Length: 311
Ligand code: C5P
Image (tube, rainbow, N blue to C red):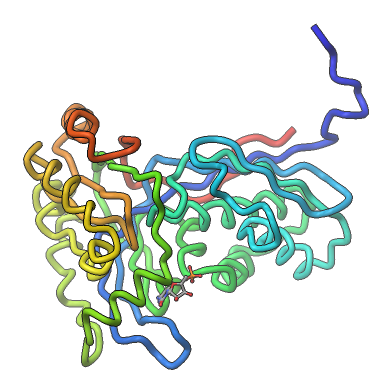
């Protein structure tokens, strides 16, 4: 056995995990002058996690492991790295940090994996450097990094407005069971919104009332009613860019899913199941029919970004 020399061991490490999400409903208005689309969305955090291990370093760096980690940028465009720099700048910290990302959430899959990395990095750097940023400060930094980053911090169930970053917690009872059909090929969120602009020309303000049955289903903990209420305005645009997505949608329906929807901007397809066992059966149907590169099962809702170990 080779022993790691003492000086090579990280002095301290903070490990944070943050969940991916499903948009139970995603309603999209017309592109605004700032280039973004106004949203009315209901997020649910699910038990598929990103883990970020932050260790002290002289400079800022990032590495990644896990499925699809080759597709994660490790240059300055990396959202977790930008989150670390944002904490250092806000708190006046001169130190660097190395972030190691353990990918669990599909990359460019419409489940906010990159946003979860950023949320986890905010919490990890705040803990590592003892900067003691308030929840509101972290949320403000999160919103500056990306539309889905605030929700990865908060977790559970929330209604998102604005770009999706203005959050109101929503009441939800019980546990919901999901099966996900994951593709190796990602979809660019910006490209899906562009395709949306070509297909749809929404007029008038977003109508939040359309999600009343969905909110009632959450409150009642009623999976059948939730399944019937799942909705995604970006689904047609995602299918336009990736026509093969109709296959996992059909397979999940045939396997008795209570509802099935493209997750966010895709290409992951999320199927709501009756139970944990049924979620495994839907996942098996995805695998058997060859319509997914990888399958995952999960439950929701779960908590947002949390320190899991500090050593
Ligand atoms: O905010 P984020 O960087 O995650 O968004 C990625 C891209 O998705 C944006 O550059 C924009 O083109 C598009 N987008 C949008 N409207 C939103 C959220 C994102 O048009 N509400």
